[in-house]
Length: 303
Image (cartoon, rainbow, N blue to C red):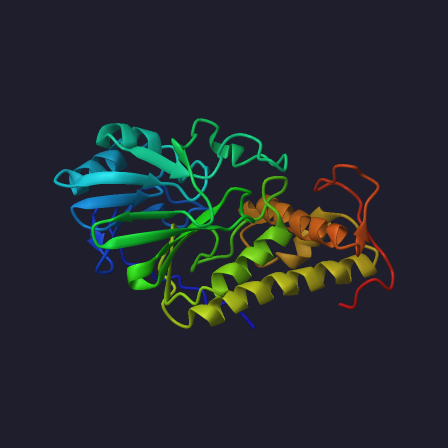
């Protein structure tokens, strides 16, 4: 089952667009192999609003957000996770607006010893939020949903009034997301996919690219199956005696832009660590890396 990716995306950099009754979007001009056309910043509500994932510090982008919000009050600046295409502008925007930033831990080790999105060490939220927290304003209510996997501190946000999920990088329409250890964790990621699926949202609004509007549950299931197919391919390589991740990537990702192969290797490492955690694979290294040797433990798993 292939993922029904959505590659078509009509937008204009810096232009505020009303994409639903309660959501507006402004796209930053930071395209790339990991950001697609750029970071989509979401403005939730009218009059008194929340802003999600303000994006990178780019003068034109910051000015575009100021222009879009000059006659409104920003009450909350929300951040899905601390990566450099999501969080750097959060504090400058909050300072300009006179409000606070909200996220899970960023830029520091978590209780589990994970990095906590060290990609943007300059960001630390004013208010730390997690499962069960509710953020609201006039006519809008947002539920905080912890979705570790892409990063240990990733959050999604459910907009009750539209049964919509602002999904950050957890689920994207244009591509799968990177799960790169040690901050990313594939076992956590798979559990978080199920968590979002069980909410039965009508629409997903990712930070990069177009929304997922058609058969959201089926899209998430295809996302999950893609990871399971990758895992089966890894197991096949291991059983054949191929123990090195870079060699696996050459064949498993032969049809993928080679600029993404290093990131793909990290995702394969994440998948491998999941198999190690489950007892199906072993490695002599105490802290496995992409260059480590991995060995299939015979008769442990059928794949």
